[in-house]
Length: 193
Image (cartoon, rainbow, N blue to C red; front, side, top):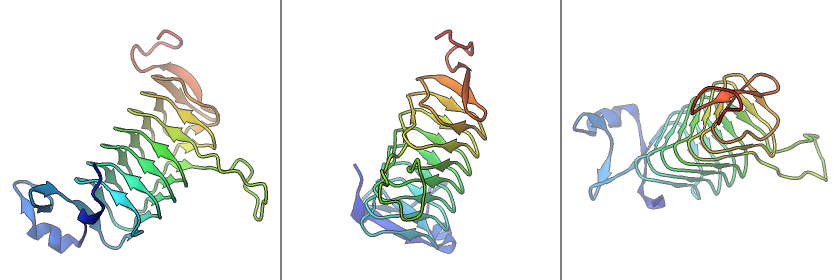
């Protein structure tokens, strides 16, 4: 369970002073804490699970929920109302759009961008929020772009630099612009699984 009151802000100097065994961390009442490296901007309403580490220059907006044992890289932006499951890793420079849902044990590479607006026009009164979603055990390579409404289904892999315009089937491997299936995670053969 996420423990909002157990969040700490830690400088690199403090982290050196609180080594527990060989793993850096901070513990209160024998529960692993959240480590937030300064400077980062974490909204007071954000709920972050124990064992999660947030690296420098990251922005976590209001209403965000992050599970336990996650790693959020530096310069990551996590938009309002996003939900991130346990054990997820988000690398440096990723943009997680508002209201996005990310499952458990997901890997999101450096510089991955997500969008929730199909028609991004300033002052658009017909704006409809349509965030992508990522199911459990998905891996997204560096620099991929995930467009509005796309669902990355359980266990799929998105290659680096791919532009994902359509939902991806479970355990499929997709690459390119636009992203197209090239194989299956289980056997590697296209259309086999």
